[in-house]
Amino acid sequence: MASPPILELSERAREIFRRVVEDFIEHGAPVGSKALAADGTLNLSPASIRSVLADLEKLGLLEAPHTSAGRMPTDAGLRIFVDGMMRVAELTPEERERIEAGLAEDGPVEQALAKASTLLSDLSGAAGMVMVPTREQRLAQFSLVSLGQGPEGRQRALAVLVGEDGGIENRVIELGDGIDGAALEQASNYISARLSGRSLSDAATRMRSEIAAGRTELDAASRDLVERGLAIWSEDAGERPVLIVRGAANLLDESAMHDIERVRSLLDDLENKQSIAALLESAREAEATRIFIGSENRLFGLSGSSVIASPYRDREGRVVGVLGVIGPTRLNYARVVPMVDWTARSLGKLIA
Image (tube, rainbow, N blue to C red; front, side):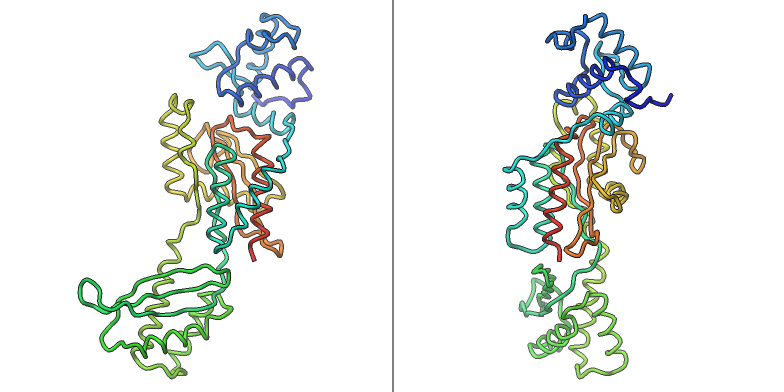
């Protein structure tokens, strides 16, 4: 049965429903009529409250776990609450400053992405997630540095790729026979000259075209180094993480112990990352923060968890990724929504 809009409920039913949801979000346990009547603010007897709770249960907004006489909101009930009753909180100046200061630390953009995920986890008490930007960064410099002989007696070199954003990636490659310092320097200079201001794929296409057409002054040893250097990053690109997750241990709270299979499924999805990334990807075109509640999540087979996600943009306003928080359905939505939104805005200021 479809749940009614919140405005179709009586004022008494709305107030009792709101109290049940807010108490459940705060404590994570079903709420009983005696607890609701105890403080006297409803001016209703436990019997009257039980009658309203029963009506809300029939409407599909509440449910009664078989182990308890109290009620807790269903996923549909939480959706009604989030869309029609929730009052979004304001971040404190201290929370805003903490987010901005944490992200503004010097370092490559990957460090800021990891920091954003950690901040979201720390502030929300759930797991923070940040999708890595999908567009290729532009590159500034490439160098090959001799490392001498490796454990097996073969000559090795360190390939260093520097991005315009300051990010640095290193790979160790084994050298063939006849490779000396001059060949390393020649290959480094050739690649750097063609990398500057280009994405790796653009630079690779140009270099391979020049080599195939014989339009280079590289000797055979240097050409081999160029090809191997490009191959390393081409193979590695598809294996780079699409999602940075921090704080997964926060999901193992006391309430999780009652449903360990659900939590194990969630942790498996976080470890795999692809299904969670697909869910976040669906929020890429959202104009505002999106909330996915429990069984609404059909992109991965898990109920009992919610995701709050927001796209983040670069300085030119283009969406480059999505970040968010995942946790139990009793997430404090009113508090986490502005937290995710502010982190997305702050991170976007750092993305060139």
